[in-house]
Structures are given as structure tokens and as C-alpha cells.
Amino acid sequence: MNPELLLAHFDRISDAPDTVPRLRGFILELAVRGKLVDQNPNDEPSSRLMKKIETARDRLGLAEGITNQGTGGFANGDVPFEIPPNWIWVQLGDLCSKTGSGSTPRGGKSVYLNKGVPFLRSQNVHDDSLRLDDVAYISHETHEKMSGTAVRPGDLLLNITGGSIGRCCLVASGLGQANVSQHVAIIRVALDGIQRFLHQLVLSPYFQSFVLSEQTGAGRGGLPKNRMDRIPVALPPLAEQHRIVAKVDELMALCDRLEGAQAEREVRRDRLAAASLHRLNQPVGAGDTQAFREHANFHLQHLPRLTTRPEHVKQLRQTILNLAVRGQLVPQDPKDAPATDLLKRIQGEKAKLLREGKINREKPPVPPSPDEVGFALRPGWEPARISQILVELQTGPFGSSLHESDYKKGGVPVINPASMKDGRLVPVDSMAIGPDTLERLATFKLRAGDIVMARRGEMGRCAVVTEREEGWLCGTGSLILRLPESVSPIFFATLIGSPFVREYLGGSAVGATMQNLNQSILLNLVIGLPPLAEQHRIVAKVDELMALCDRLGAQLATAQSESRRLLESVLYEALSTVREGRNQARS
Image (cartoon, rainbow, N blue to C red; front, side):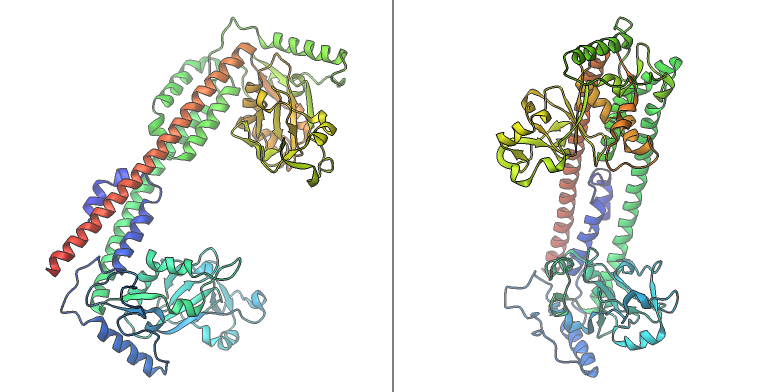
């Protein structure tokens, strides 16, 4: 392993999100394969070490081990990997005086106490140490009854079930009395002095692959004792184990420094990106417009430096939408017909539809004031309630209107919240109906220009219906927002998807999170309505900037992929250097 090589390329390889964990795993993999430190022909060979372990097991009255000496029970050529000449293959159980899981005290959680003997569970076992912040306790009487699961200093504790399976720590000398639960295995070596190497072995990708592949049982997988005991172990001489442990400690300290540098750099990047986006999201007064535009231009020019992680791209998208609906994304044109004229046109269209019997008469909404919008309106904009803009708001059919038997593969798609992805409607194969059902529910057919909106789950998720989706059916859990011809449906969908509206729909309007969208709350929402011409300019600008976000996201993915490839190259070169050094030493 060459620390200088890693440090020289760190700025590039650290863009890969898993750089340091990969380095840690690589170090441990070299360690357990005999490729991290030099072998010394003067070391007492592993075969003699194994004899001492067998003698220690005999003194404890343990049964004969399960390994054929030196081969680990493998036929020639079947060993997991090649090992140095003075190493031997054994199996985990051959090295131990005790292996196996703990147990649950009679009465379970009801016997836990606020103090007493620590009862160690899987959440207490971490790779670096035991964490006792939320440890449970049992009485000394219960502890005595569970003497078979008591731990000792130097034991390895291995999580053998659940999401933390494979985590392993070494019990420190100062712990005192303790027991383990049935989700934690005790690995107790028969000969003192090999614990630390064995701990590094258990944490290595080699050993962890056995732990994960040997899980049994449905649901909460587990590693049984008989399978754990038979995991093959390449055993080095004791003196080499000590050199390996020291070298691993040294290189893990290097990883700690790399991880700290990476975290510090990411914090700086996050602060810079957050500060810039925060400034963009602040209200802009009439006299601050030029300064705002200069800052926005600066942000856009430096996007590659400010946008270094996927979450930065997501935050940028939200900022773009926020600027769009507040009139800060494009300049206003005094030649545009003001939004007051647009509201009159909308009223005229709705009156015509009412006379034709195509919509129902509604109670006129209370005219909103500019203060209800929540931000300063741009010139030409007007405050408006959603109810003033929509021609019609319609729910999808009730759940009882559609039965499982109504769905036909290859039929007309039914649109539910799951069908709305990135502002587009994507049909779901299993959600389609035949012509008879469609005719029965014809009033719920979608028209081009409609907006379909989720009324449960992610508030504000919506999509504009295009000519391709015309005639599809609005399903349960969705709303149809029908607009007059004088309003851009794409701008309106941009408005609905903006943080400004999503926060309102998410519960700020009523002070609590809504599980299902309240239609009256939606209709009462006050927005800033721009002139129609500006709506089109906003839509064009949003499309342009979202395309830029797409490119940034692709660039990030490419950069991370290149970082991974460079990391692989660096690791390969380090491994090649190790191999070359071993070959020269042997020759």
C-alpha cells in the first residue's frame, strides 16, 4: 500500500461516494491474504501456532477440531485463495474455545433494569467498539442463570442477524460482567494473542462475504453456529499477525485523515452552495433587482463548482421553481398585457362555459389582497385565488367505482399518483381498463391541457396531459385541474410543483401535515399571477435551466464513475506493487 499514491490522487478519487470505505476494505483484504506486510522466514510457522491452539483446546476438554491440518478441510486447489508458504488454512471453529449466540432472558424486555449487568444487543455492537448509550441491564441473579452467554475481555462479538449482520467488535478489558442476546455471537479464541488479527479478518470483505452468503431463514436472516465455525481462515504466524495488525492500524489512521479531509471539503462545498441558494431564495425589493440578477448570473456561471452532489442538483431545481413563481427568473416586459386583463379574460371564458351548461355556478371567491401572496408582486402581476383561475376541479372516481375485475391488460391507462413521474404521465401496465368501464366512467376522461394532480402522498405532484394521454382515465387518489385557454398549463404545473405551493399544500395552510389534499384549501390558495406572455417566457426559461440541471446531474454521475475507475486503478497499482515486492523477496 502506497500512502503517497493515494494522497496524490485524493482530490480526484474522493469524488466517488464510497472512496474511503473501499480503501478500508482493500486494506483488510490485503491483510488477510498475506499481501500487506513482508513474510519473515524466521517467524515460527503457523503449523506450530496451530499445535499450541490445539493444546489449549485439549486442556479445556474440547473436542477435536474440524480441520485437516494445513488445508482447512479443502481438497487441493479448492482453497479460496493462494496463501504465503508459512501460512495454513484452518476453519474458524478450530481457533476458538467458544462460538455461538447469546440468549434472551426469561421474560424478555420485562426483566430489563435501569442498572445492573449490561445486556448487550446488536445495536450495541459496532466495528470500532461497544456503544453503551442505550444498553439494557439485567439483574445479577438473571446474569448467573445465563452464565453460558457471559462475555469476557478479549471476546469478539459478532452480530449474526438483521440489518447490522456482520458488525463485530473486540470486548475491552474494562467492561466487567455482561451478557449477549441471541442476535449476537461470542467468538472466544483458545489462545490469547490472536484476537486482534481475527477481528480484522472478520471485518474484511472476504469474511463478510461468507457472513452474508451464509444467512438462513426467512425475513430476519441469521448465521448459524455450524456454518460460522466452518468459515475458512488463512492463519499467519503469530509474529506476522502482530505486524499485520500494526500496519492495518497505521493505514486505517491514514483513512481517518482522508475521511476527515473529505468531510471538511464537503462541508465547505455544502455551505457555499447553501449560502448561494439561500441568497437567491430571499425576497427581492424593487431597488435590489440589479444586485439579485448579478448574483443569479454569478451562481449560474459557477454551477459546476457549486453543484457537486446529487442533492445540490435537487436543491437547484427547487430554487429555479421558486424563482419562477415569484417573478425573479425572467425580466418583466412593460409591453405585456397585465394580469388584470388576463383575469378578465378568464372570467369571460368561465361565464361562457356557464351559459353553455358545461360548468356549474360557483360562489364568487373573496378577492385576495397582495399581502396574501407571501412575496412582493412583480410589475404586471396580480394576486389571484386558484378558484379564480380554474374552470373546473374534479376528483377521480371513488374507489368503489373501480373494481379489480375492471382492469384489463392492454386497455386504456388509468392515472394514479404513481403514474406521475418528473412531470410526465407514465402508464402502469396493471392499471388499465376496458371500453365498457371507460364508457361507464367517461366523465373522468382526461383532456389535453388538463393537469392531473395527486391528492394524497406527495402533495403537489402533478403532470400536464398531452394529446398522447387524451382519453385516459383519472384514477382514484388524483384530481383533474381544468384550466381556461388563456392560462398556460405548463406554467400552472410549474406553480403547483414549486416549493411555495408544496409547502402550503403540505400542511402550512392548516398547521398540520395533510394525508389527503383538502380541495377547499387548494382552491383558496393565493398566488401571484403573471401576464400570459410572461408565463410563456418563464416556462421557456425553466425548461432551459432544468436541461442545465440534467446536464449537471449527468456530469456528476460521469465524474463519480471516473473517480471510481481511478480508485480501481490506484488500488490495482498498489496491489501490483505489493505482488512485485513479494515476488522479488521470494526470488
